[in-house]
Image (cartoon, rainbow, N blue to C red; front, side, top):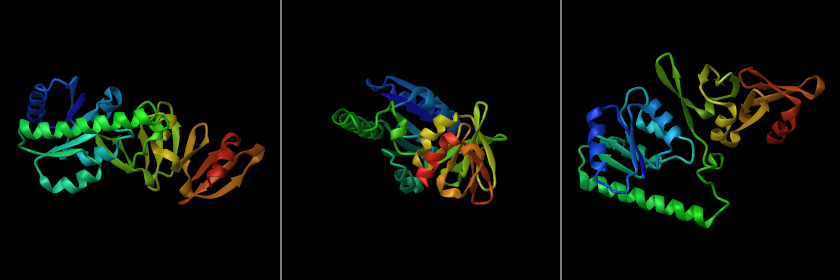
Length: 246
């Protein structure tokens, strides 16, 4: 299995790497020091399991887990504090390692990971119509996004995003009170967000729950007026699909 360790403390990462090195089925182990670096490594390396610290600067492990697109890697939380256990398991974590842990306790967590991986493989093998790892759009949508802003990381709930527009290699997330820049393509982001959003223009998409009025324009185009007054272009090419969603 491929493993990613996410912890802001170097000694904690070193200990876990040393214990994992004793397992013969661990193919690779990589590390991330914070949530943003972890997101980048998950996208690039697609690990099978992430050992995730909970208390980290800017973005907690629980916030990171809730921001992962589906299908997400399996999550094992690692923390020195037991008060986060209920919230951790709400994110469908496989296990919860309480520091300081030993090799025996880690082995129990790894056995749970192995069992879940076998169950996932069996499910995929028995049903060709179910989601596969090569089709992330068929999994569950993300509930929140992590956006870097002036040296800080902001947690943006997907339900708060009214509409999205492209800006070169970025997208702009428009909420009622903010306009946030995220390095992502519109097509790739829509695959993560699920059916709540619909493409309304080559350069824009909208969350349908926010649409209040559709204003007809010339040549089949229209304009979508959202709650709060935002006006979003809707081209003739996408008008039918928008109306169908409404």
